[in-house]
Image 1 (tube, rainbow, N blue to C red):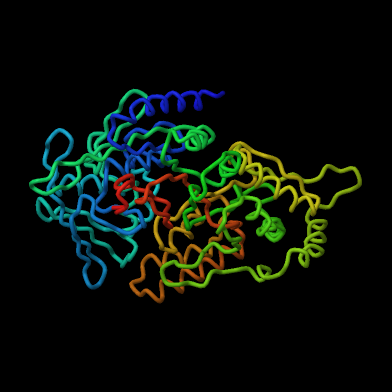
Image 2: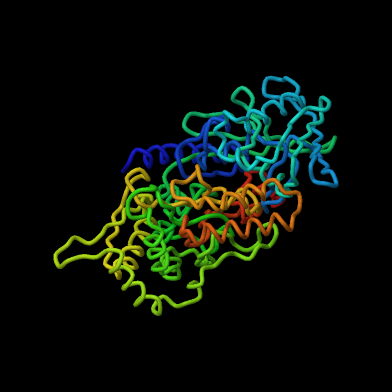
Length: 483
């Protein structure tokens, strides 16, 4: 038994011992290492860190259980008619320690998260922001140079949580208790009502141990599941209806890792892309509503831009194979006895990663191409991207593959992408995004496979909901309001 599993089982023993005295506390496990409150400007967040930040260090706004925007630090907000100015009125409140929360503190911390020196993973998504300033002690203004109707979705992400001195403003307070974390908050009540305290006991650990603990009724909630560990749920006796899947939107596919070597050749990328049996891959991964995808965009994004599906996208793989085999012989000529070409793919060492590799071995093996596993992108030809989109903006999808971000890019796509960032016309912005996606897809800078798979285990928590952002607030899980 590995150290992570032993640690989680030890934590669960503590949680079990506290259950009776915790007044109905929700017992939750998030996949990963035990999180701490971190500075979002310091670098990308792990799923466990993101969950903790969204619980104890809210931003101006936050997500409710359905993925809708509700107040966080801000009690209300207004947007100018031209969409270039957002005005937030802060709730009355204090930081841990008793200092009053004022607009200047909030504005300063948000400016720090989008500053040039910041390593915030979503800094680029806020590129249209020109100013963040305090107008009064309780009013924060955000000015943009072009409209961004998805700005509130970005501000609700834990990457824009407001952290001051290693602490946040709630909605939960954090009280570490040995190897586990206790989150608590006092619920609003009437003058003659006894204040009610909501508690969540939070642990972190490996998926296998979390699934077993859930099956044994030691925990109520498991969060943070991905395609990588989904097969582990099939090995446990889970009650009917407890395995829940988010309708997550985002990117799940393969990206070249170097501008040198065989994958630097667009023809080789195109060959491998066309040879993937996406329907068989999605079937092997097992997500119930997961659909194969051959476009960078997906339905439901701002502007309703038709995704750029390649011409071969509607052709059955069996009909493509003869031409693909001939193309493979041309691109990889071999004499009898020569070693087959090898493509190294970086995917997680996990049951889901093994399924993905096996499907690629089957698909590319038909062309005489071998597939080898790589532990990280530096040793690979292709790496897996598995990310949930932070908003419904098409920009995030495309800017993930612009020149300077990925080693293999399409320079011609950068011009419409930058023009889209600057234009004030929504129709023109959509047109430019569509053009940039077409150019990127034709250059095969990314091989889309499907949407990201995100799953949770949920028992008797009416406040839990699935949503496209796969963000799950820990508040009001028992009472069902999901706020």
